[in-house]
Image (cartoon, rainbow, N blue to C red; front, side):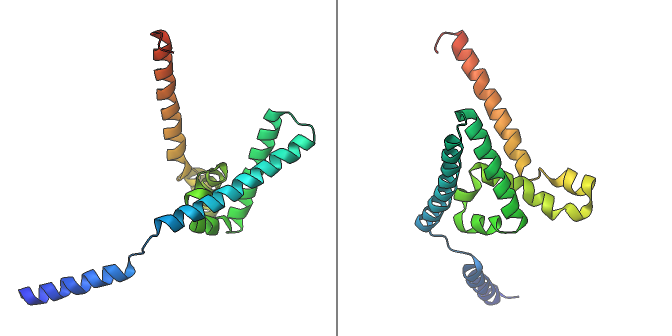
Length: 155
């Protein structure tokens, strides 16, 4: 292959890459994330307000709100609706507690055909595992830092 053929092949390849690479609009992505995240928060606030109208204390309201949002996310994941929300809303759908519920339910649904132990049992935390690991590690580091600052009298 001579030099001219290599350049032509590289040019064709670069054109192909340009065609298949998706373009992203940051402003539109942020707007969609804000809308989806906002809707999830409004639903959560509506659940809190309803629980308050039933006479529940603040801790119980929060617990019921979390449980209902997690249940809704798992059910929507099961019906393959939540992944569509994630595709549209991005971080707006992934960051709240509903996104965490989706990250646990999706692998369980995907790998259920491999059985209870080697499918669901082994794969259920493939997405959520790193979140749990680094969340616990970060809270440990911050707790240690807080303790040190308290001991030396800064806080």
